[in-house]
Structures are given as structure tokens and as C-alpha cells.
Amino acid sequence: MKIIKTLALNLAVASASQAALAADSGFDMQTVDPEADRIALQNYFKARFPETEIADYVNGIYAVDAGSREQWEELEEFPPYEFDVEKGEELFNTPFANGKGYADCFENGGIGIRHKYPYWNKDEGTVKTLEQEINECRTDNDEEPLAWGKGAIAQISAYMAWTSRDKVFDIQIPADDERAKAAYLDGKKFFYAKRGQLNLSCANCHVQGTNIRIRADLPSPQLGHVTHFPVFRSKWGALGTLHRRYSGCHKDSRSKPLKPQTETFRNLEYFQSYMSNGLVANGPGARK
Amino acid sequence: MNKGLIIAIVLIVAVVLFMTQSDKKEVSEPAMTKAPPPVQVEPSPAEPAAPEVSLQEAFEMNRAMYGKGHSFAWNGEQHTTDHPEEIEASKEATQANAEALLASAMAKNAEVAKLGFEWKLTGDILKKAQQSIDQGNFQQALNLAAQAKYHARIGIEQYHYAQANWHLSVPE
Image (cartoon, rainbow over the protein chains, first blue to last red):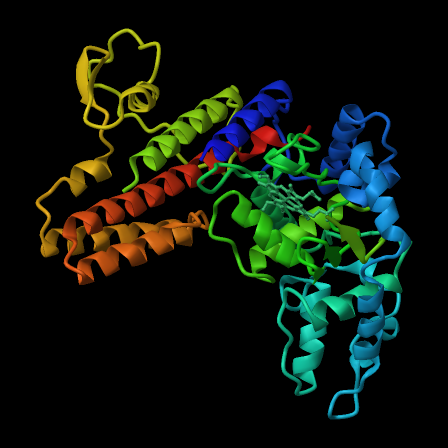
């Protein structure tokens, strides 16, 4: 219990000293402006961490915490996800029972397209993620869908990310469909709303709380959060998807976590990925 | 129920309330916020000089210092530090009372779940309350159901607070 008290107090200090300015726009369908949000977020982090180049935010906490960066760079010399990328490539190229394969489901045969996800699908009226379309590719070809969090789906996603390294995120929010903007706004609101028994928002840890010690951990800046997924996490001892991470972090506020690929999490990914526009895809990644 | 745990939770709630107060600012409410303010205090009809602290704040302060079952004066009135759920749990420990409180706790939790603000432990607490009823331990069932209902009620308050205030931590 003591741990949690300390946590709440630390964050109280953090939010008091860095309380964001009162806002007067961007919070409803009339005023929401994704590009203004993205620039404001970059400016916020520029002011907080003047030494860090914006392009370096793809490296998560290691972009702002010199202490752990060295260890991580050593880790990256023999990347723990190497095996998973190979396995993912093999899975990707193994034909389904009907003779078709993943390459038939995606633009450009699935190569070098990671940075275009998630995207707004007008026909379906919803945000589509890469993992979702990997599974749809399977079910469309009479294969069983894969479990969302880890294993084969993460490996296939890792291989696809690998083939997209250094491509620049350019998530679009089509102006001709209000529902796309609504999905973005929903994701933004989810990110900034306090919830759970600890009354914490994602932003309390990943904006105001960035690089402020919480128990044994330093939360990363939300800028660049999605660029390197899926991630090989030492704590998991395995590769995991972004939505697996979302569930874990959602639970960290002592909320009952949502399941991977629910609409809310896909909207959250849409918002977070838009925030990463201009940064490069660098998945898969390695984290503690 | 573990007293130490409850006191600690109350302390957290107090700290957290303090935190949420501190990022409250005078802002014009955007059009989409139809929610009431998070601190829901019925204004007293006579409306004397505005008190320095709200009833909610006075409640949390007294609760944190003295625990439940304590009375305090606020704005010329007497109040107790009991949560409404604790008052419900102090009914006679019968099967009927335990089942009724559990049913209302489950309904409240369904309500907060629908809003997307269900807490992590509430579902298990509800399960344990049912087990206690099955074992004939009605006082324990009442206490657990009360705890779960409290979680759900605060979760709903959080939802309304979020509707009106989520934008306060967005960098501008």
C-alpha cells in the first residue's frame, strides 16, 4: 500500500509543477485539430527535454534517460527480436491451406507498409490496425485467427515492421469523413482521461510523468510510442503487440483493462500514431 | 475487511482528490461536456456565506483523519464520515440484506462498466461477496458488496469528472 501512496504523491508533485495550460480548443468535434495537437505535443517535449532531438523519440524512454540508454544500446547489439523477425518471415511466406498467402491480402505484397497503419477505413467506418488485417487475411482464407497479444501475430507484425524500417509515419485523418475525426478525438480523450482506482490517465505517466520515477520505472514520452512495435520486452521474455502493452498499462491505473483490438484501443492507436507522424518506423523494438 | 487497506485506500482517494482539484482551472466548458462537476454537493437551500471547503473536501479530510463512524460539523450542519455504502452495510446481517446489497452493487458495476470506467478489482470483490453468501457469512458479504458498490460509484464520478476535465492535461 505504501508503494501506491508514494506513487500518488510523486505524481501529485509532477502534475502540480507541470500543470498544462488551460485549454480552449481541440476538445470537441468543432475544434479538434490533430495537426495542432501534434505540434503542441512536440513543443511540450522540446521544452521538457531540450537536449533530445525530435527524431530520437522513436527510442522511447532511452531518448530522454541517458542512464538506461547505454544498457539498451548494448542490448540492441544482439537484438533479442532477431529470431522473431526470422520466424515472422517464415510464417508470412507459408501459404494457407488454399494456396494463398499474406502477400495476397496487402498492398505491395505486405512489404514496407507498416507505417501506413492504423488507417481510417471509410467503407467499414472504423480504424483498422495491422494486426487486425493480419487476422482478417487469415479468416478470409478459411484459417483460424491468431491470438492478439503475442506469438505468431507479433512475429508476423515484427517481420512486416522490419521491412518498413525508416519509412516515415504519415497517418491520415480524411477530412471527408467526420467519423474519422470522431475516432481520433475518442482516442485522444481516452489518453487524457483519469481513470481506475489510482485515478491516473495515460498522460499522467506518459506526458506529465515522463522520466519521473514510478516505483522502479521511468515512463516514456508518448511522442513516438507506437513507432517500434511490436516490442521484445525483457519482462515478458518475448515479443508482444502494442495492444498487449495497452492492456497492461490500462491495468496500471487499476482499471479493468480493455481487450486488444477493441474499438477504443484502435482509436487510441489512431491518435497515438498520428502524434508520431513525421517519425520513422523502427520496429520491432527492444525494451526492459 | 482489512482496516489498514481501507484506510490506505481512503488516503489515496484523498490525495487523488487533492490532485484533481489542483489541475482544475476556470475554463469555459466545451460544448460536449454535459456532465456535472465531479464534486457533487447538493447546495444547501439557505445558501449562507460560501464555506471555505466543500462538503466533499471536509468529508475526505475527516474521513482520512478519523476513519468511519466519526461526526463533524460543516457549514453549521452535522455530518458523519460514513460512506453511503457503509451505512447500507450496517444493516442486519441477513441473507436477504446481503443479497439485496450485492444485487445493487452488481448493477452499479454494470453501470460503470458501460461507461468504460470499471475498476480492476471490483469483479473479484463481487465474486467473493457471492461466495460469502453461499457460505452463510452475511456480514462479510455485506462488507464486500459495499466495497464493490463504492468502487463503482467513484468510477462513475470519475467518468463524469473526465467528461468535463479531461482536456486539462493536454499540452497546448
